[in-house]
Structures are given as structure tokens and as C-alpha cells.
Image (cartoon, rainbow, N blue to C red; front, top):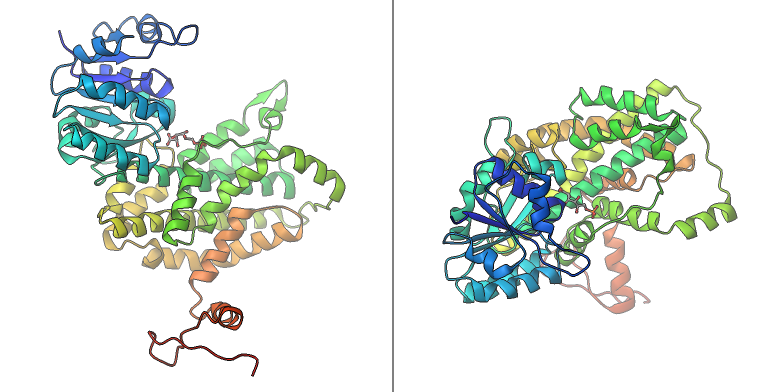
Length: 471
Ligand code: 6PG
């Protein structure tokens, strides 16, 4: 008998989603390409490892795989972003009919998704570019799913996605039609950018506890555990506690891990997009830059010896500093989210995507990597306004944290510890709340050396002025 749904790519994510679909009663076919000596019998192996899944049909031949699906054929691609997706789509096109649906569930760049949608539209094939978050465990037990693109295509697969998605606190599936074109992948890209910011913020807070306060990982884990009882509760903080408690032969495993952070692109793409749209993105940009700097281990080792800068451990009241650090972290998290969502707002408005931020926050309350108590609060905040920054409670919170964030960043810098995301957060807060900035001087300088002209605040804003500055 024919399968209702097909999954291509039996890597970690593809396999986990396939088993999740099967667990939810969906008859599926799975396919993995054949590459001699490298990928042989991969789909069949999924069944060998999971012998209870009798209804799954494995394939290594693409035509047989497609022929095994009932019409309209729904095919989920879970393959590495980039060229592999184009090649797979090219291979599928002659095998598919009008009305069939291709879903790309990888971390594809959203502009590629827009192009692929256009190509497939000509062929009458429906294309749904879909963000999927939650890692292996999420994919297996319930991810957060961000589908965008062809709405008709989405409506045909909605039922499948709802079955496998995580559930929010009200029991609704963490999946929603995000918007047209590449908006599903765009939203996933920004999800990852916020993920980078949240991870780097935790790393900086950890660094201050470890290097400035000289606390050991077990103690730090217990502090984070207390924070988990507050509105700082999040998945990323929770896993950090487990990581810090992992010891090997009496030594923290964290100390054995090479300090070079890898990245697959989404954080940097978000920063590029922010530049393209003129969105102030320093705080999340710094999270990407921190990974880039971490990768330059050789340079860091050499200059560490050459400069031998002094790093002063904290000489202050530990509990008092921890309270301030907690507030600083709270503020940074709000700003990380504010900046990430403000990129989505700008791009949504420019492209008429009409993104619904309360819905996006809702599908991010479970299943995904940046799920948190704050995200649950954002569901409500975005019902009132698209700007976190303009929300009354956010204003009260940020006003109360401002002093502590400034203090922590000041202490970090004075005593020799880099905190790029925390620093940028306080700079953003101070900058965005400054009514009269020194950008007037920039405009004067531009006019001085390049006759670029300037506007005046005491004249009509459309009128350009030029001054002969040397006279
Ligand atoms: C998720 C993760 C997932 C993956 C990222 C990691 O939401 O499930 O974000 O997509 O872990 O690709 O990205 P980096 O490799 O760039 O850190």
C-alpha cells in the first residue's frame, strides 16, 4: 500500500522526524541517497535499528520512493542547506505532478527559498519552506515548526505537522503558517540568531562567575538552578546546568572542551540581513563575532602571551555581585529578543509578509531551542504591540536593570574580562533611549569633507543645508 508522506535524508533530523511521524500513525516512506562506500543502505538501517516500525518503507532509489507515495505526494527534505537542496529538487521535478508538495525542513537561506518557490511554481509544484527547531530530541518528540511559502501546500500538510509538533502550554501544536515566500526560513534564521545571542550571554555570565568571582562549575550550576526558579527559566539555561555538572575523572568536562565555537551560517545571515535593511543589530551581531574571535585560537594564544594583560579576580561581596549579574542577564535577554524581533518586524513590513509576532512567540514556547519563560511573556506582549521596547512591563524591567547591567559591564571591562554581548546590550539600551544623539556631529563632518548636506531640527526636515565650514 502507498505511504501518505515521504521523508528524504536520514541524517539525525530526518530520521528523528520520520520516527516521530510514524509514532503518530502516519504511513511514511523514507529515502536516503546511495553514495558508494559512504552512504549505503542508510534508509534500510533506520528500520534495522527500529524494528518495531513495520509500516515504514525504506528506499535508496528515488523513483521507487516517489512511486510509493499516495497523491498528492508530500515530500519533506531534511538535507544540508545549500546546493544539495537544489540538486534534490531537480531530481524530483520530473517525478512529480502538479499539486504535489515539497517541504524543505532544513536551515536553508530564505532568499534561496524564495527562488526555489518561484521555480517550482512554474511547474505547478507547491513549495513549503519550513523552519524546524529543537535539535534531535525536539525532532523526535516534538519540534517547533515554522512553515512558510505556498499556503495551499501548507493546508495539505498541516495535519501531519500538527501531529508531530510540540504542544504549547494550552496544548496547541507549536506550528503556524508563518507567511509567504521565504518567511518560514527567515523566521527560523532569526530564531537561530537569538539562539546565538542567548548562548553567548550565558557564556559571558558564566565567565564572570568562573573567572571574576572564581566559582567552580558545581557552584555555578547551583546558582543557575536558582535562576531557573525565576522568570529567567529557559531551555538553554537548563542544559547549561547539566553541562556544568558533567565531570570526568574528577575534573569538569567543560575545561577539556576546545574553546572554538563553530557555526553553520544562520547567525551571520541574520547579521547580513540586518545590514541590508539598516536594522541596529549590534547585540546579536556580537554573538556571531564572539564565535569568529573564538575560532582564532592561534592568534589568541600568541597574543595572550605577548600582552599578558592583568585579569583581576573579584574582591567584592559575591552575593551582591551575583544579584547584579542576574539583573544584567535579565536585561540582556530582553534586549536580545527586542533586537531579533525588530529585524523580523522590519523585513516583514518591507516584504508585506504580515508576520504575527505573538503567534511566532507562541510556537517558540515549546519544542525549540530558545523556549523560555520570557518567550511565554512575549506571546502576550506582542498582542499589544510589535515592539518589546515600548511595552510597559519591559520599560519597568529595563529601567530597574539598567544600573546593574552598567555596573557588571563596567566591572568586567575594568578587571579584564570581555563581555561583548552584555556590553552591547547596555549600549543599545542607552542609545535607543537617547533623544538627541551625537549623530549631528557625524552629519556635520560628512558635510565638511564631502558636501553631503544635513537637515536642521529648527527647519523643515525635507530641506538640505550645506555650510562652507572653512569660512
Ligand atoms: C535548532 C538549532 C539547529 C542547529 C543550528 C545550530 O533550532 O534546532 O538552531 O537548527 O543546532 O543549526 O547552528 P550553528 O551550528 O550555527 O550553531
